[in-house]
Image 1 (cartoon, one colour):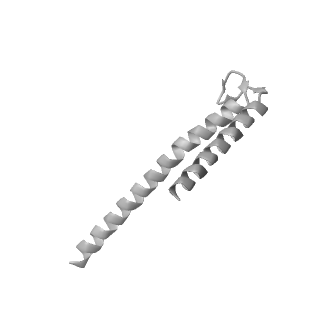
Image 2: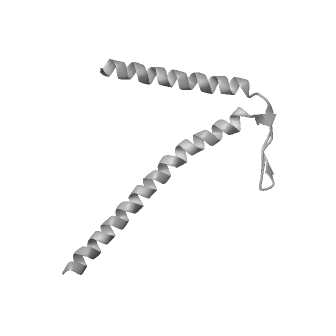
Image 3: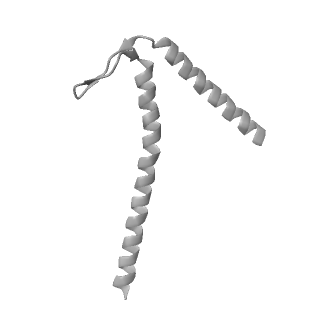
Length: 87
């Protein structure tokens, strides 16, 4: 069973790598992005899209971690209030 899971993970990673490779090869048209008056150099479409994907993959878990910490902090504060108020 463990070997089957490893094989499935390897196949999923290879499939994902193939999809990314095909995306990059199919999107070679150059675009220039402009934001807040700043103009980026002309790059293939795939570069900013993959950069946005990687930024989202990095920022998403950080925001989730922040939300979990914040909710735990709220729960501990309300638990302390209930304990103090109960006396």
